[in-house]
Amino acid sequence: GEDVEQSLFLSVREGDSSVINCTYTDSSSTYLYWYKQEPGAGLQLLTYIFSNMDMKQDQRLTVLLNKKDKHLSLRIADTQTGDSAIYFCAERVLTGGGNKLTFGTGTQLKVEL
Amino acid sequence: DGGITQSPKYLFRKEGQNVTLSCEQNLNHDAMYWYRQDPGQGLRLIYYSQIVNDFQKGDIAEGYSVSREKKESFPLTVTSAQKNPTAFYLCARSTGLAGGSRSWAQYFGPGTRLTVT
Image (tube, rainbow over all chains, first blue to last red):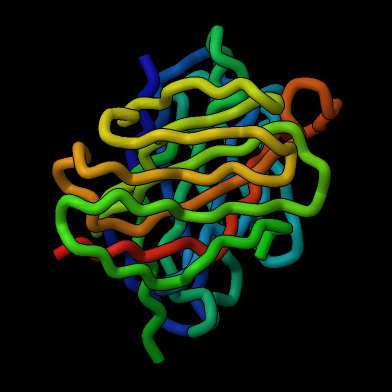
């Protein structure tokens, strides 16, 4: 079955690193994604990782994938106040219905001065 | 805006009225999606369309209807049968099965907040 879980809240100080975690259950996942949502806005794709990779780095963002444990994390280096938002992880699963993503419930990141 | 236009940003309706939310894309992508987001919850898939003149139900299709007569447009109608229509509605696009996408990522519009009283 498809289920994606995230912790609800994370609070960090400006300049520190943030690590947002996600677990998924579908072993047939091919791609995993991280999206950012600011208040009242749509979701913005931050990055994605293919399931045969274990790490991907993109500027301040580092994605780690542990396929054995079905665990995905997003590390934001030098976290800024502008990083305050809700972060969603999502997995693409292979179903008969084509390209569908399953989203986690989101992690609210609060960056404090 | 992810190449997707949703209008209006805020919509108010009286209970018992049908309402149609607009979603337009200008990137010639095959696949389009409608999601519903409630406070403190993730996104739930309402309907999706992989190709023109075809669409499938998502996880919470009851009380909603869609059409896909044109590639660039995927309007969602919230009918009076939807018991709890007040929510934030998000439309998304992706290149879909035929697009040869390397990531299968979905790209979202700015959303429409619907309030029904």
